[in-house]
Picture 1: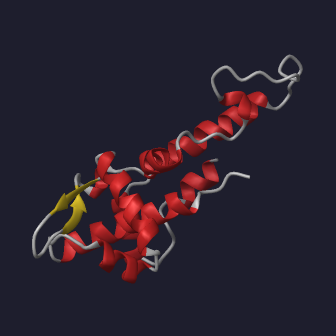
Picture 2: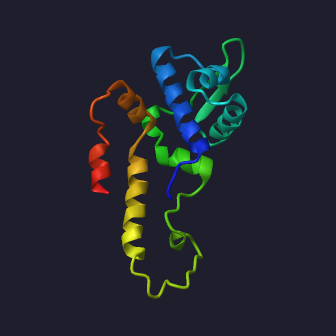
Length: 152
């Protein structure tokens, strides 16, 4: 089953929180505020924020009003790159990984259709930005991603 890990989910939630806060006040946000506001355990969140910082999504600010802020515009941060930074490559089937060999590869009848599905999922995740997540929360009508999901 293709499923986001909790860490990837928490990372996307946190980045969306940073984007919303920066839009409102422009100030840095503390890990504690994100933890309290999003319901993410602080020890888990702290490790994720460090990883997100190392991967260029966040910058930290020290001092009285210190905390974190997005390193890039939220429209330039895709869900795909966040998920990959936290979880590594997204794999729908093992036959899509390097050096993978399967005893059925010579007679497999689903590899090509699964590869198309895999590529469509990657394109969709790459097309959704943190900004899109922010706007979707603001607009509770039909999500604009519905058409992309139907295209899968």
